[in-house]
Amino acid sequence: MIKDNLAGIGMTSQRTRSRLVSRLREKGIKEESVLAAIESTPRHIFIDEAMAHRAYEDTALPIGMGQTISQPYIVARMTEILVDSGIMGSVLEIGTGCGYQTSILSQVSFQVYTIERIEALQKLAIERFKALELNNVTYKFGDGFLGWPQYAPFDAIIVTAAPDNIPKALVEQLAVGGRMIIPVSQPSGDQHLILLEKTEDGMSQQDVETVHFVPLLSGTI
Ligand code: SAH
Image (cartoon, rainbow, N blue to C red; front, side, top):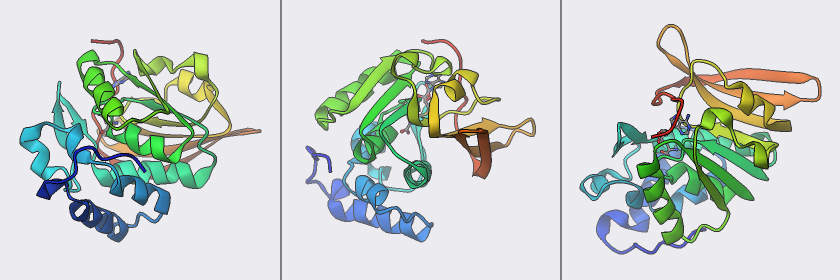
């Protein structure tokens, strides 16, 4: 559970968040730890005030710099897949964005490492981590294609922007028994959410569902 410093006004109420959680249950999310994290996280503080009245709709919203806050269903689904498939000791997230997914991860894992390539977005995300008093989030401004070798190997890796191919460095930084959930752009233009698991003998790969993410881009701005 995280501290909600901003509860009070109608749209931020616990009841509004509970309704979002009910919708996620209807859509098939079952993992109680993930639903509890969503229920206790004030999504409205991760988006612009002008858009805050839509914070508890199950939809992606713009966060500036051409980026988006992911749809709650997708945040829940990706997190649930990681939680259900193994341990959540150290988790690497590529694409901090507004920091909402990071905040959900911080409640279901021991330590979260998160990388963002747009400094202006990262600065805002850091302010939110401080406001929510998240004490298990380590962040970095950089290019997520490279991962974060210093803290590897990771039990889980979540990528919240879509590359054309699974980045090799990220596969290398996965622990044996580790899982990576990542949207991958297909030549057809579709994106498929892929679950990859590193085993003693190699890798296994599973196609989860079709998704829509912003592209994973090289370099920093
Ligand atoms: N996790 C976010 C989703 C953010 S959108 C949420 O909770 O809603 C995806 C983010 O990935 C954007 O902020 C974008 O700037 C970032 N991104 C894209 N390519 C990246 C890269 N190579 N390294 C790090 N971040 C990247």
